[in-house]
Length: 475
Image 1 (cartoon, rainbow, N blue to C red):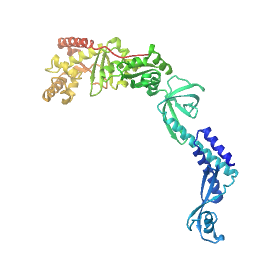
Image 2: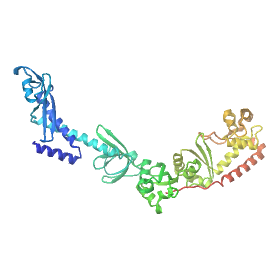
Image 3: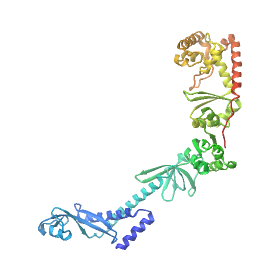
Image 4: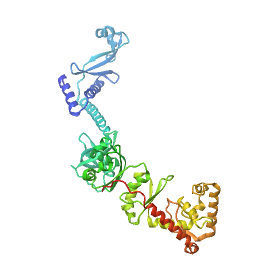
């Protein structure tokens, strides 16, 4: 290959593959060195350099400058001082001098080896180029064409390279055939032995967030922010949004005129329902919005366990829980609180039974029973087994002496009542349980129970007048 042909090859490969000229030249130099090493021996010190002036690859053999008779010289490793000074007048004995030698002709095997070296260099360069192109696009939405199924994953042709969409990252019910356009979220880019591997997802909450970013200019501009997003892919999703501009409604911006923006997202997700909720740093307000469209009557929260007991009217219970618990499950994930939904009737019965049970403790009045119930204790047994330090948090029993006395009287009531205090229902493993007295034990306390029920009805009535829900819901 002459100089002009070599230059054309370098320029052509660089242009067609998008690879830097220096990488191609390096591959050619390495191929020449491999062929020269076979000719001059493994011990020969060789260097190959591309000459930009001549367009050729120059090969240099490094020899040690010695003073010796011609017949004693090792030609591949030594050069006489006289010959060395013809090349470099300042050469001294002991120097290493690079002598330009002819590039060997490539035999069939050498040519094949050189070809493999060049191709490997080009492949490595292409892989690095692809990795550098896509590592910066990690976290973006990209589009490709479905090609085939490989080891359970859908192979997506992106043009320069392929990406994998694992079956677990495909929305349930979706079917793609070869040639279909596929849009997905670039979740990871890994550089492995086989080159860069791109992984896609259509089930990630981040995919939903990116879709809204594409559809809503206010999100792209930073006016509206998506604070959190949870999904059950293909079924339902909830996103919490907040606006940095008082004049911009975050929910309205995401819904769009006549719902066009959110409908575009829903269409891409094959009909997945989306609830758009205004974010709030007030947990009660946030949970109320998160459980929409169900109407909440009252909320009782425990900061220590991050648990909320939420009361709803009987006709709102199924709406709050959702199909197969989906609504409350997503609301709990979105808000970060454990949510316990209970109907008004069930809460009323539980409170009534709790107050009736607690009044079995000697000296506990109606007001005391209410305070103990508000402290989270549903029956005498729970009080009897509670720690004194925990009982001191109940209103009216803040002192250690009062709390200890309450515990001792509760233990006495349990011992005296025996089997009269029996579980009414199987306790929730995440709650303190629920116990109530047997019918035989109730007879002498009918008036107390009636009074407790009356106070409870008044309490529930007051709770029902609490603030209305705020928020947006779509789907």
